[in-house]
Image (cartoon, rainbow, N blue to C red; front, side):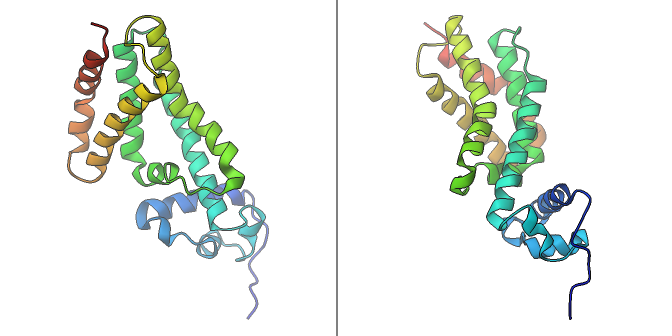
Length: 197
């Protein structure tokens, strides 16, 4: 029996990505299938091949879209005119909200199983997100607000603390409301340990 569904779709790439994200949220990454996404979109099973050569290419695109959203989230929360503690608190709260709302997507973004073809795009996306936090740390060092050390290392420590809280909340070990309510204290405690003595 031949597949009589249309090959063309108005904005098939966006439709497939939206469907992939829905599946990721509800069923997990292993349930993602280009064939199933095509069926949901009402196109032939071959149509997604015009946009994604395979499932890994779809996952890469989904991760990159996640980084774009995270970048916009962090940019909207950032106020370079603020002193470090309220600035970092706002960024940390924005990151945590993103992590809580997009736990499965964030896991995919951090998976590091992306194909070599996507390496440059992934590196650029990471620089626009995690790298922006590193630049905040470096700025704070220039102003004497935190200790002199490798900004990448300080960002790793701060990010690990924040992502740990997000993981606890996503895993049910901490209520999301409690995680968000604890951000001020997390940043204050972190910065107290980093201030020059």
